[in-house]
Length: 401
Image 1 (cartoon, rainbow, N blue to C red):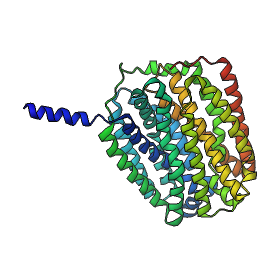
Image 2: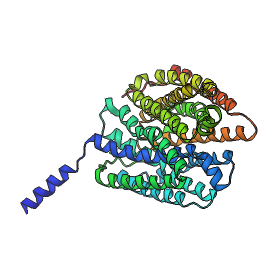
Image 3: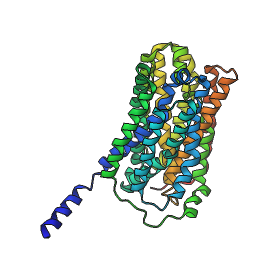
Image 4: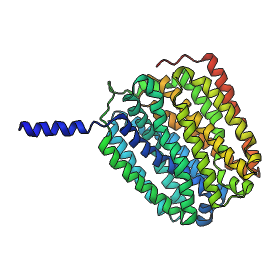
């Protein structure tokens, strides 16, 4: 009996995985989810051709996804607020797998849209739960880097997954891309079952208390920056692939290279921002938004020169995802009254801005605006976010670790 008990104890000790291992599994999941969200930007032309719709219509694949994340994500998280993180993470990834199988077998564009709706519903709760657990197992000085690590899976997806998916779809068929993501989901599911710790809130979460974050001045200011400023990113980002074709004259290989360098910039920008201390978040954010606005204001012009197109892709990625973890951290660290809901809300607000940006870009394109005009509109919107950030620095309450 004693020997059996000792073996059981040693087995349980081996199951106490390191923080890095847990974050690595979370990153694999956010890689898969991020690839699902963004890979469609490299496949728009193929969707239009295969499913008999206009390229401007295919922008709905991003818009519908983003709207679903923004609306259904918080609702799903509120309904499941008192459940333990581990079984929820497993359930969300199971939904992710099913949605990608539906996408891979979609006979019509409407079915593909439905699959996007399903996969998007788990996006914000999954990111939010991963951030909650990551912050819970991290000491104070490493909380920002933990948030950046979870976000890092998404940026690596943009660097490797999106160009790989675009290339895979260009050489073979776009359906294979969704089968690949379903397989990634299965691997993530197994990893979560093995390594996820049974982290639970010290107190039973109360919906009213968690929602009180919407009265938090710092949270509201950051949400305004995201909705009115960061949404400009997706006004331009949604149509990167057709812009590569029109301005740079890229084929499948050139588009893949351009997407890779966007992702490389995203990864470097993300992890660089993960080193910023809470007291410096707003100042760094101002510089990041200024750089991003300048990149987009000149993006279409420099895209006409192939070497510069690669450089501009890199800078676009670095500016976009060098900004994202700063905004995420500002919401999550400020909303101390909502440790369970803040991460989900942050992901939802980002996707609301994505929906606004993608819808605006599609609308401008449908009424005859050129891609260059669209990038100027995007730069103008980011400038609005920059102005709000400058005001925020003057009136926000200090963030304490």
